[in-house]
Image 1 (cartoon, rainbow, N blue to C red):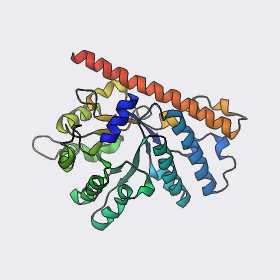
Image 2 (image 1 turned 135 degrees about the vertical axis):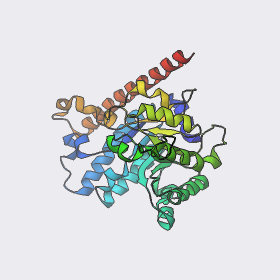
Image 3 (image 1 turned 90 degrees about the horizontal axis):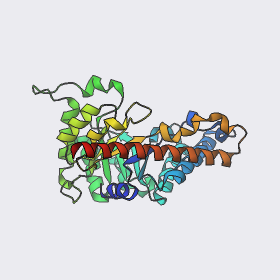
Image 4 (image 1 turned 60 degrees about the horizontal axis):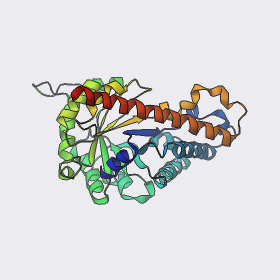
Length: 308
């Protein structure tokens, strides 16, 4: 997590922008002439670049969700890689939200996301529910290529409780907490770094603040990726427990709240050219990203005061 932690320190901002474009999140003018999937993919790329240009100096990272690009076929997958490359060129840490999970040679093949420069990813998300066989190939690739992984532990969706809150011991430990213990083990080989954090992180949803605080206590060497802030209902006030006592150890994600911020004034896009629309998209995203940074850092300062 060295590169990510350095980027967070440089920006003073523990937040990440989810680059999850959909037709509904793009102003209509950007899709007006999109007669094919290839055209739509190019519109997504222009949209992404406008967001990246607007926020690159105030956020440490972006998190493209590969499913949004795969939905457009090969052209979309190519734009996913191009988006990542563009973000890295602007100095951003790129967290590929791919949520892969399989075993053996298949897991090793998926781990090519970390081995191949063509994907332009600094980290990826991984599903742990096939056990260590599905994680070890990613850990090995991350170690060899100085990359990171984030393993699903307690996700932000409401129905996560159907599985992740199930008790798995007579001490009342939940399945999510058991997975958290495994994540600490999987990252053990690299947790002796100067940062105190391993290269194996965990995905822990902002919509579950109590679980987040419990998992933080169980996982002192694990960096958290925290989705669910904003549009999904997670609040800055509930985030304090996801961080360590020094106000570090967590990266908070917002997707729609930033890339869709322009939708607060959709009428302002009537009659605009493509270039003017992209400029307004970027301006709205920047304003939202700055507000998110202030919201989170204020909550962390308040926590510091309370514990002083």
